[in-house]
Image (tube, rainbow, N blue to C red):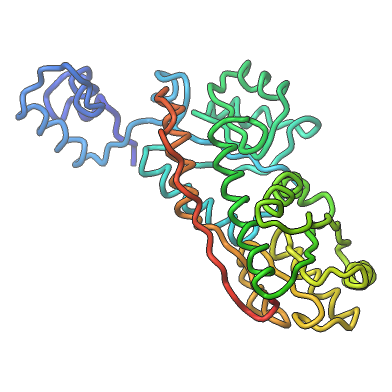
Length: 327
């Protein structure tokens, strides 16, 4: 079937295309009789008319797409997928489509993506200044990094991570662990690790405990076992992992090392992956409220797109503890 056009709606309603445009776009300050407005809306519904996204992008100079670019090395955990799902739903309510794209700024060019889509905004984890300039030169009006932008988006991301770290450390402290180490896993988690390196000392100081040393574990239970033995022999009995994947490696290393969890070493993760309930022992973890985080992100981004001032106050991040057997 041929797609209905604005001209088809105009003919069916017996009005001009300009009138159709005014009615369907709800253009302000136009004196259109209610009867005419109803005829246009009824004709559009009868013909299953949908405005052309390409035509709207041409008029506005941008599409209604929000492009979210993830570095190629970042793997989306269960919690990350929940956030994306909530972001997609909330952006749709605001009239935008969220498009997630995995790529790399620099060598693996993704210029064609934003040049083809002409997004209303590009969200990314982090980005270099020259890459921001390249996107703006290509016509992208807004480039919004979650880390490194120094604005309300970064404040939101850091506040959420700070709340996770605080609950992880407090849970280990409440279980009697005064000496705690922070665990990450090679370069795939470098962005989360960078945030942790800033936040863990700050949160530890606020709790009045020794600054947790940063341990980078290998992605191999046997090699992790050796590192974990050294950690425990140095007097550290609690491990605060950057996410559940890292915590799972630590648990596997503890088994390989013959260390009892949580009696000899306690482990806490972040993100509540589906497999975390199936580890031995089941992993205690902290999870952020994906819906609350998505709500705040969408408000900040849509305000920036519509050139409105930032929200007066960011919502307090919601985090919760899922207590299982590893602490």
